[in-house]
Image (cartoon, rainbow, N blue to C red; front, side, top):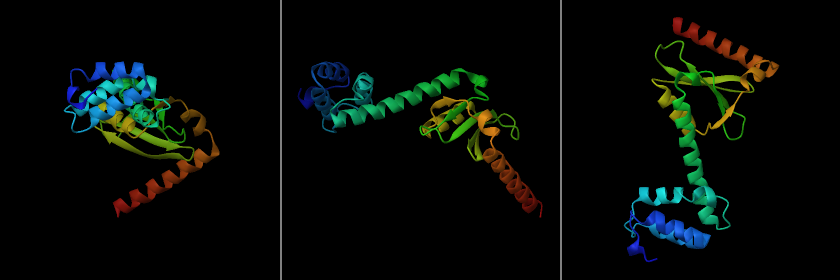
Length: 184
C-alpha cells in the first residue's frame, strides 16, 4: 500500500489485513503509517497496532516484535490500573511488585494526612518509603507507570524475617533522629 492511501479511518483494517499476510507486511504498513509523511495520526497508528500486538509480540520480525511488546506493556498497565481503580477503597492492603519481584508496595489510606492515599514501598530489608497522593487514581497511575504491575502477597512473610525486622529498627532510629532534629 502506498503511504498516501493510508488514513486514520483505514489504518486498522489495512494493518490487520497486512498482518494476515505476513509479519513483514504488517511491519511495512505500521512503519509507513508512523512516518510523518503518511498523514495518519500517531494515535490512529498505535490504536491500529493495539489490535495485533498481542498476536505479534513474539514475532520473528524483530522491529515489529519490539513495538508490539511495548504496546502490550502499555495496555497491560492500563488494564491493571483500571482494574485497581474499579475496586475503590478495597485496594487498601493490596500489594504489587515490580517485574523483577524484588521491590514491593502496599496501598494504604494515609494515616497522617486524612483524605490522602499512599503507596508504601518495601523490600526484603524493610520499608523504604512512601508516596502520598490526593486520590487512589493518582497513586495507582503513579505506581503502574513506575512498573509495579504484579499482584503479590509477600509482606506478611517478609515481616517475620530477621532482615526485615533489622530494617524496621533502622527506620525507627532514623525517624527518631529526624524528629529530634526538627524539635531542636
